[in-house]
Amino acid sequence: MNRTDGTSCGSYSRRQFLKHSTLALAGAAAMSQTPCVHTACGAERFEVKIGLIGCGGRGTGAVLDALGAATRVIYPATGYHTEDVAEGAVVQRKDIQVVALADLFEDRLARSNENLAKLGIRIPKERCFTGFDAYQRLLAIAEINYVILATPPHFRPMHLKAAIEAGKHVFMEKPTAVDVPGVKTVLEAGRLAQQKGLGIAAGTQRRHLNSYRETIKRLRDGAIGEIVYGRCYWNGGEIWVVERRPGWSDLEWQLRNWNYFTWLSGDHIVEQHVHNLDIMNWVLGSHPVRAVSGLGGRQVRTGPEHGHIFDHFAVEFEYPGGVRVFSQCRQINGCDSKVEEAVVGTLGASNCANSIRVKKGESWRFRGKDPNPYHQEHENLIASIRAGQPINEAQAVAESTMTGILGREAVYSGKAVEWDEAMKSTTRLGPDKYEFGPFPTPPVAMPGRYRFS
Image (cartoon, rainbow, N blue to C red; front, side, top):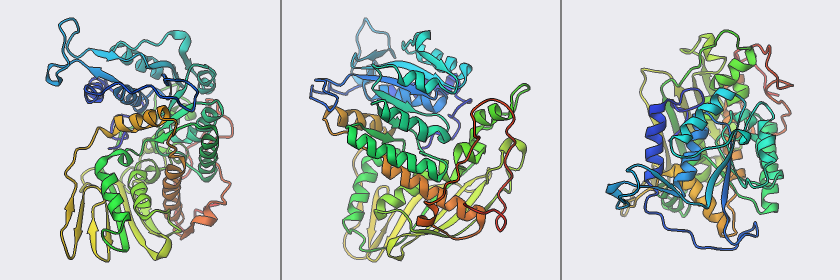
């Protein structure tokens, strides 16, 4: 359930696109029309006008997911079939439309636009914006009211802040930031959205799965007693790499190969493992108070194409009340894979996802059905807006992002890091000015030498 495993910027092939689009749209075939309601926007019916900022594979997929919450596909197997509509054709409802696209790179925007056109979604040239200021030009379009943020995470705070200030509802991919100033910007934007009656949903899609929601509700209601400790993992293989091409400046190559630079991705403990850390925060109802200890390094991915990030992390977090959570994440081929969460309590244990085992009495397993979570996160946001009660996930995902940053800094430095002290950091990662040109790869962090400030 992560969008960094081969479908991110620069690697979204036609085959992957068509596979994703079929799955993304077919699941919504039986959706009924949403009744007209008054919304915080003052409209009797909230017509979703989407602006996409970040047109790589992740952004294009997010648009399809949003449309999947509001379109249907004509397939005989679904019972939705007519003689005058070709099998597999997309039937778009008029109340949800894609209005504009923005991306730093023209080639990436063009590829996204071409792929959307295959589904009958055509964005005119005057609504396609490129460059570092592309997001500003998109946000200036008054009719856009639903913005999808899918650029590299470094840009998420500034884009979120600008979107909320412009009065737009936002779906943003995770993580929300790569440094503490970014986290604070997201928290501030979340508070502003609350004041303005705007919705914010995040790409932590487990929060939109019925199985996780029901399991965690039971855990927080005391199903396994007092939770003693937890553990979470995202141990998997290597992800895509964008090789440097002649003529690309340092900054362009890093932006295209963004997963491998901490200033752009936050490192994979933040960019990918945030899903599992988010579950721990959700179950425990809090963020950690400190990263007690951490180990990690750069053992296998050592070439220049891998930037300067680590390929494995292991962190021990302490939560309020002394509860410990043990965290691992790895991106190395040929190793055992494990992507899961678990907690142990005084009365039993749970995988957080769909089962609870107790020492005495009857254990429980989720027997219901789960929606496509990538659709559901958009569907829930849109439904909440239409009901006049927009959801706001900014604080939750900002704290989960900060949890990853806390762990990263403990491992990079080889020292324990306190949450409250870390939140005082003013270090902003990245260039002072956004322009193509020289920007040397930062040195690899060396525990015992690196200092978090």
